[in-house]
Amino acid sequence: MSRLDTSGSQAKADGDDGKVRGRSAAAKRTHVRHSGTKYWTPRAKRDALVFLAFALPNILLIAAFTYRPLFTNVYFSTLDWTLGSPEATSVGLGNYIEFFTSSDASTVLSVTAIFTVATVGGAMVLGLLVAIALNANVKGRGFARSAVFAPYVLSGVGVGLVWLFIFDPIYGVLSWVLRSFGTSSPQWINDPNLALVMVIIVYVWKNLGYCAVIYLAGLQSMPQDLMEAASLDGAGNVRRFRSITLPLLSPTTFFILITSLLSSLQAFDIIRIMTRTGNGTNTLIFESYLQAFSTYNRAGYSAAISVVLFVLLLIVTGLQLRFVERKVHYA
Image 1 (tube, rainbow, N blue to C red):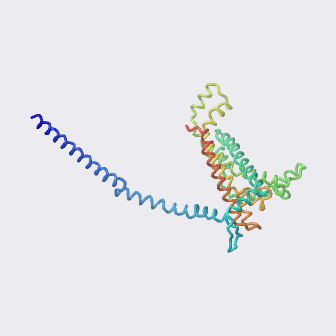
Image 2 (image 1 turned 180 degrees about the vertical axis):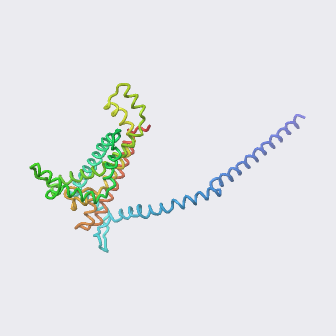
Image 3 (image 1 turned 45 degrees about the vertical axis):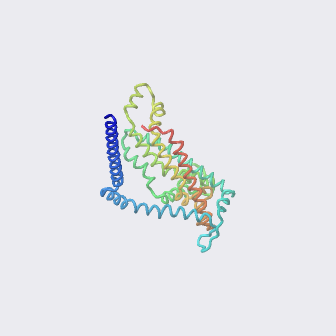
């Protein structure tokens, strides 16, 4: 009798195991069926088509007008090619070697560094000071904000022409003012060192409004109760600015730093208008222009300089994201 019970129990257990395995297999099939159709329901397909309808034209435009010229320029940088010539000779990395071993490379890189640091630093510092002044509750601040921001939206060509007339050592407004005080005007255009200073002044003036408006937005978004609490604790204006305002403005400063650096490294229009042949203002992008479209007509060599500038932009942006962002305090 015990044997029969044991056999019956074993058969019942086997039957239960079979049912469990059957249910598990059915559940797996159902899961596979559902997982296969989960993301491709009619609604999902419709959403995917809508996404492609909106995104695909932009992707094609970016690929055609950004990435294709980029890779084409990299290819041109490996050629010894005179602009307009139907023939070109492959030189590999010869253009890069020539650039970095030439005496002009150190001058171009140093001018680029000085111009970038001076314009970015000057515009950010002055923009912050102007933003603090514009944040005060005084009459006419709306007009003052518009006046400060106006130069940023003006054409760089127009700005360069106006300031070129101001700095002209013979007929310029600045020379007339200096002569009224019995002093002759410096040779801003002809002196390489003064030409770089002249371009830096104009570029800082033009981009000052951009930094001021962005900083003003950051100042107006600050919690006033925190400022009032610090004031009640006896913190003065300088202490509140150093301990509260600057840390809270760090995201704004980080944003302005990245955008201003990228813009400064690609500055061209004002430099081209005010110093047509360089003469101390040969940044990387302007040197690339002169090599391709000036008397040299060296398109391959110019493309190599453009690639160097592109790599420099990547490095600068990567270093900012890697190290500078660590000091950003997000509220």
